Structure formats: C-alpha cells, structure tokens
Image 1 (tube, rainbow, N blue to C red):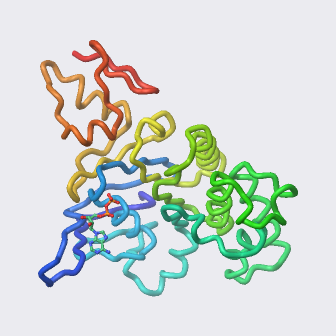
Image 2 (cartoon, rainbow, N blue to C red):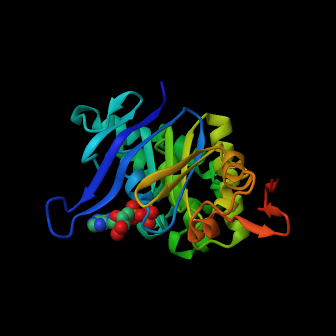
Length: 273
Ligand code: ADP
C-alpha cells in the first residue's frame, strides 16, 4: 500500500461562483513510504493546492486522497492525520513567535500534551536534525537569528512532532545557495535515517534533482509527468529527432538548458539522440 494516494482529485476554488478556478484536475499519483519526491511546476500550476490536500487542510472537490489507506475526508482521522503529516509552509519563519528557540520548537510537542522529558528529547532531536547546536541556540530569541537559522528553527518545529510524512513548500526560497543545499542535505539524511517520506515543492529542480527519488511535474492543474529525474530528462530529450517537448517556461524552471549537443544540469548530463 502506498503511503499517499491521490485518486482522480479535482479542486475548485470558489466553486459555483463567477470566479471559480479549477486548480487540480483529475490528479492521480502515489507516493511510497520513505520516498523523497520533488513537486515542480510553474507558478499557479497547483503545487501548493496539491500539498495542502495531504494533511486535509483542503479536501478534494472530487476524487479522494488517501494517507495510509484512510481518506483525508474522514473526520475521525483528522487528529492522527495532523500528527502524521508535517506541513512546512512557505517562509515558515514568519510564524516563529516565542521568545526563545526552545519554546518555539517545543510548541508542537507541548500541544500533544507529552511529558516534559519527551518534549525535551524532541526539541534536541529536531534541532540536531536541521544541523543546529542545541546548547548554542536553545535560549536565543528567534529574532536574533540569521535567515537560514530561522528557517531551520521553523522546520525543527515541525520535525518535533515526528511526522512520518514531511511536506515542505519551497523550503529553500530566499536562502543563499550554500544554506539551501545544507538544509536539503539534512532533509535527505532525515529520509534515509528515519525512512521519513519527504515531499518538496520547488521552483528549482536543479537544486534537488540529485537527491529526490521522483519528480512530479504539474502543469495547468494536471500531472504532466511522474518519474525519476533521469526519466524526466531522457523522456524529453532522448527521443530521436525530438524538439523540446515542454513549454519553454517549464523547461527553464526544470533547469533544462541546451549546451552544445548535450543537455546539462548540475547533476545529470544526458546525451541528446
Ligand atoms: P502554485 O503553488 O503552483 O503556484 P497554487 O496551488 O498556489 O499554485 O494555485 C493554483 C491556482 O489556484 C492558481 O491559479 C491560483 O491563482 C489559484 N488559487 C490558489 N489559492 C487560491 C485561493 N485561496 N482562492 C482562489 N484561487 C486560488
């Protein structure tokens, strides 16, 4: 059984009004436990809408989303769904509000009414997982941290819930490349060491192509492609006589650049047929 299953999901904002907008159209795909998946697509293609279905913030207008075989629309499973799926929104540091890093990261576990010793263990664990030194940072005010440190603290706040599925919406947006790569490396470690299922929404496939198992490409509310990064590049570039099969804006976003006779990305070089 796949850990996440989208079965012909439609989403319509403001359904039945003059401003209705179909933002997901017959979306079907599965994610296996322990996979790391990149969700890519141009702005407005439906990425954020899609990931908000995984923890039930949004429910399908049509179709079904199953997490561990249970529909997200089942009310009695809502609480377990929120514990199972950690969702890191865009610019999550905007939601840091406590006066110390410790309190911020402890907020989630305390809400779960866990004993203090367990809260403490989880804060240490989560800060370590994002590469922050517990002793050094625990009493700092989040306001005094760098942008990269704030982002890590915000991610740690979600990790402290110990979700089986971690969904991050543009986790590296606005970070320096070096800081971004380091954060992604920690997410990869989390996947490999804990068998956490990780979905990363990104504008920059190049940045994650070497670490994800699979890429889901959304285009105008539909799934255009689901497969490995290598399959993606070869599908669109290895066909004899094929031109560029992707819309130019999407190509740019996927980092598919033509250099001489090869399509070069930071991580893959695939000969054109
Ligand atoms: P992406 O994350 O790929 O940029 P979104 O999921 O945010 O795409 O948006 C998909 C489409 O749905 C866009 O056309 C967007 O304008 C529309 N949309 C997103 N959120 C809302 C909303 N709350 N109300 C109305 N339309 C929305």
